[in-house]
Length: 144
Image (cartoon, rainbow, N blue to C red; front, top):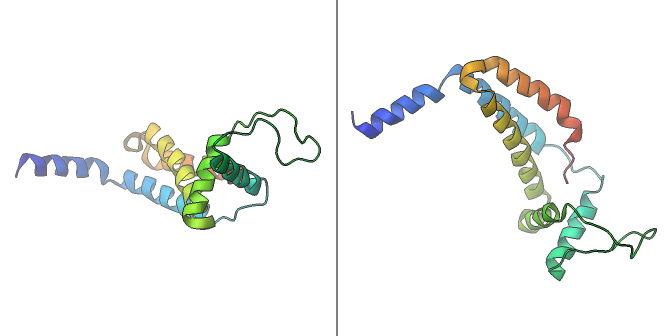
Protein backbone atom coordinates (compact mmCIF):
# COMPACT_ATOMS: atom_id res chain seq x y z
CA UNK A 1 0.00 0.00 0.00
CA UNK A 2 1.40 3.39 -0.93
CA UNK A 3 1.89 6.15 1.59
CA UNK A 4 -0.96 8.18 0.06
CA UNK A 5 -3.34 5.20 0.15
CA UNK A 6 -2.43 4.50 3.78
CA UNK A 7 -3.08 8.13 4.66
CA UNK A 8 -6.44 8.08 2.86
CA UNK A 9 -7.43 4.88 4.66
CA UNK A 10 -6.46 6.35 8.03
CA UNK A 11 -8.48 9.50 7.24
CA UNK A 12 -11.51 7.42 6.18
CA UNK A 13 -11.39 5.35 9.38
CA UNK A 14 -11.34 8.56 11.40
CA UNK A 15 -14.27 10.18 9.59
CA UNK A 16 -16.44 7.30 8.38
CA UNK A 17 -17.94 6.48 11.73
CA UNK A 18 -21.47 6.28 13.10
CA UNK A 19 -20.85 9.58 14.91
CA UNK A 20 -19.86 11.27 11.66
CA UNK A 21 -22.99 9.80 10.07
CA UNK A 22 -25.11 11.38 12.81
CA UNK A 23 -23.49 14.73 12.11
CA UNK A 24 -24.00 14.36 8.36
CA UNK A 25 -27.68 13.41 8.74
CA UNK A 26 -28.34 16.35 11.08
CA UNK A 27 -26.62 18.82 8.73
CA UNK A 28 -28.27 17.43 5.59
CA UNK A 29 -31.68 17.57 7.25
CA UNK A 30 -31.04 21.07 8.48
CA UNK A 31 -30.01 22.20 4.99
CA UNK A 32 -33.17 20.73 3.45
CA UNK A 33 -35.44 22.33 6.06
CA UNK A 34 -33.85 25.77 5.73
CA UNK A 35 -33.75 25.65 1.93
CA UNK A 36 -37.46 24.81 1.76
CA UNK A 37 -38.53 27.83 3.83
CA UNK A 38 -40.16 30.82 2.22
CA UNK A 39 -38.81 34.33 2.19
CA UNK A 40 -41.02 36.05 4.71
CA UNK A 41 -42.13 39.60 4.01
CA UNK A 42 -40.21 41.07 6.98
CA UNK A 43 -37.75 43.54 5.47
CA UNK A 44 -35.98 41.30 2.97
CA UNK A 45 -37.09 43.23 -0.09
CA UNK A 46 -35.97 46.50 1.52
CA UNK A 47 -32.50 45.01 2.07
CA UNK A 48 -32.47 43.69 -1.49
CA UNK A 49 -33.37 47.11 -2.90
CA UNK A 50 -30.69 48.78 -0.80
CA UNK A 51 -28.15 46.28 -2.13
CA UNK A 52 -29.20 47.21 -5.64
CA UNK A 53 -28.90 50.91 -4.84
CA UNK A 54 -25.39 50.41 -3.42
CA UNK A 55 -24.26 48.42 -6.46
CA UNK A 56 -25.77 50.89 -8.94
CA UNK A 57 -24.43 54.03 -7.26
CA UNK A 58 -21.16 52.57 -6.01
CA UNK A 59 -21.67 54.15 -2.58
CA UNK A 60 -23.36 53.39 0.72
CA UNK A 61 -26.28 55.75 1.39
CA UNK A 62 -25.75 58.05 4.35
CA UNK A 63 -29.34 59.32 4.46
CA UNK A 64 -32.52 57.27 4.67
CA UNK A 65 -33.60 56.81 1.03
CA UNK A 66 -37.05 55.24 1.34
CA UNK A 67 -38.85 56.30 4.51
CA UNK A 68 -41.43 59.04 4.30
CA UNK A 69 -41.25 59.69 8.06
CA UNK A 70 -37.49 60.27 8.29
CA UNK A 71 -36.60 60.84 4.63
CA UNK A 72 -33.34 62.69 4.20
CA UNK A 73 -32.21 62.25 7.81
CA UNK A 74 -28.70 60.99 8.51
CA UNK A 75 -28.58 57.23 8.79
CA UNK A 76 -25.97 54.50 9.24
CA UNK A 77 -26.56 51.44 7.06
CA UNK A 78 -24.74 48.77 9.04
CA UNK A 79 -25.72 45.67 6.99
CA UNK A 80 -24.60 47.16 3.66
CA UNK A 81 -22.27 44.28 2.77
CA UNK A 82 -24.98 41.67 3.40
CA UNK A 83 -27.33 43.74 1.23
CA UNK A 84 -24.81 43.72 -1.61
CA UNK A 85 -24.33 39.95 -1.26
CA UNK A 86 -28.11 39.41 -1.27
CA UNK A 87 -28.48 41.52 -4.40
CA UNK A 88 -25.60 39.69 -6.13
CA UNK A 89 -27.16 36.32 -5.30
CA UNK A 90 -30.56 37.51 -6.50
CA UNK A 91 -29.06 38.73 -9.75
CA UNK A 92 -27.27 35.39 -10.20
CA UNK A 93 -30.23 33.10 -9.60
CA UNK A 94 -33.29 34.87 -8.26
CA UNK A 95 -35.04 33.87 -5.06
CA UNK A 96 -33.78 30.28 -5.40
CA UNK A 97 -30.17 31.45 -5.16
CA UNK A 98 -31.06 33.52 -2.09
CA UNK A 99 -32.63 30.48 -0.40
CA UNK A 100 -29.67 28.24 -1.22
CA UNK A 101 -27.21 30.87 0.05
CA UNK A 102 -29.29 31.23 3.21
CA UNK A 103 -29.39 27.45 3.73
CA UNK A 104 -25.63 27.14 3.17
CA UNK A 105 -24.98 29.94 5.67
CA UNK A 106 -27.24 28.53 8.40
CA UNK A 107 -26.05 24.95 7.88
CA UNK A 108 -22.42 26.10 7.80
CA UNK A 109 -22.84 27.80 11.17
CA UNK A 110 -24.24 24.66 12.75
CA UNK A 111 -21.50 22.60 11.08
CA UNK A 112 -18.94 24.78 12.86
CA UNK A 113 -20.73 24.12 16.13
CA UNK A 114 -20.66 20.38 15.43
CA UNK A 115 -16.94 20.59 14.74
CA UNK A 116 -16.47 22.46 18.01
CA UNK A 117 -18.21 19.71 19.99
CA UNK A 118 -15.97 17.14 18.31
CA UNK A 119 -18.27 14.45 16.88
CA UNK A 120 -15.68 11.76 17.67
CA UNK A 121 -15.89 12.61 21.37
CA UNK A 122 -19.60 13.37 21.77
CA UNK A 123 -21.07 11.70 18.69
CA UNK A 124 -24.78 11.19 18.86
CA UNK A 125 -25.23 13.49 21.88
CA UNK A 126 -23.44 16.35 20.10
CA UNK A 127 -25.55 15.91 16.97
CA UNK A 128 -28.77 15.84 18.99
CA UNK A 129 -27.69 18.91 20.98
CA UNK A 130 -27.02 20.80 17.74
CA UNK A 131 -30.41 19.68 16.42
CA UNK A 132 -32.14 20.95 19.57
CA UNK A 133 -30.22 24.23 19.31
CA UNK A 134 -31.22 24.58 15.66
CA UNK A 135 -34.87 23.99 16.54
CA UNK A 136 -34.66 26.64 19.26
CA UNK A 137 -33.02 29.14 16.92
CA UNK A 138 -35.20 28.47 13.89
CA UNK A 139 -37.54 31.37 14.66
CA UNK A 140 -34.64 33.74 13.96
CA UNK A 141 -33.72 32.42 10.52
CA UNK A 142 -35.23 35.27 8.53
CA UNK A 143 -33.48 35.89 5.23
CA UNK A 144 -31.63 39.19 5.61
